[in-house]
Amino acid sequence: MSSENCLGRKHYVLVHGACHGAWCWYKLKPRLESEGHKVTVLNHAASGINMKKIEDVDTFSEYTEPLLQLLDTIPSNEKVVLVGHSLGGMSIAIAMEKFPEKVAVGVFLAAFAPDVEHRPSYVLEKYNERTPSEEWLDTEFCQCGNKTLIFFGPKFLSYKLYQLCPIEDLELAMTLARPSSYFIEDLSKEKNFSKQRYGSVPRVYIVCPEDLGIPLNYQHWMIQNAGFNDVAEINGADHMPMFCKPQELCDSLQQIAAKYQ
Image (cartoon, rainbow, N blue to C red; front, side, top):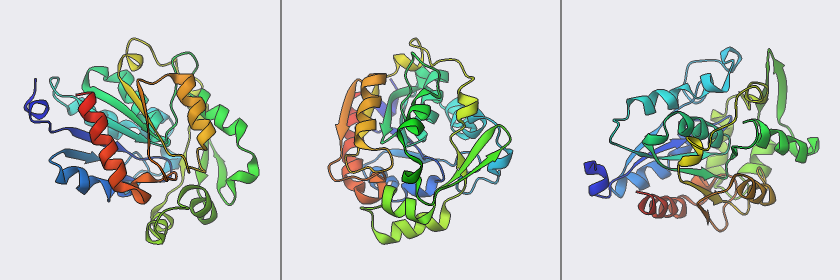
């Protein structure tokens, strides 16, 4: 057993969602570090300060490459706590499929959560089917090659994702958000996640009941559809608990990590 596990020190890898970047964890990272944990935040391709343009990223695996490269460097005797927010749930699922032996637990934070029975794009397709076009408000969509680009507008950020967050954090998002993609077309062609790899890693879902981006009923549907070892909840949290409930999120993640060490 590694010294990290013996000392109760965990390595958290925090994975952002669409249109966001590593910057969204600025409140959570120091809180976890002050408790003695190691925390890694990263920018996916064409996200945050990553230099790529989303137009040049063709597949979801390419988008997720920074996470896969990181896990490839983790020693074989160490395990990380993977935390995926929103679209980051799909990213950590790919990482769990590829490196199941390096993940102590996968935490889906108000996140899209795939199952092993359907193609990877299934939960994203169902989400789009259940989301009327008017719910997207001023979000912009644009076809680019084999993918659809998405860029959250100020109204969508304000009313659907950040409605309970400090105004300064909303302003940060409006300043730093970048166009992204759900890569549904690409994910629809990928093979299912496997029970033997992705399905073998403990999974916990953290419900955010005031989320208007991924509504509560859809979070519950994904939990039932995919199956989870545990379900936690952060009372009063909108889609961005790292901004509106950072201490509660920190406490919840530590409780989860302690259980699945």
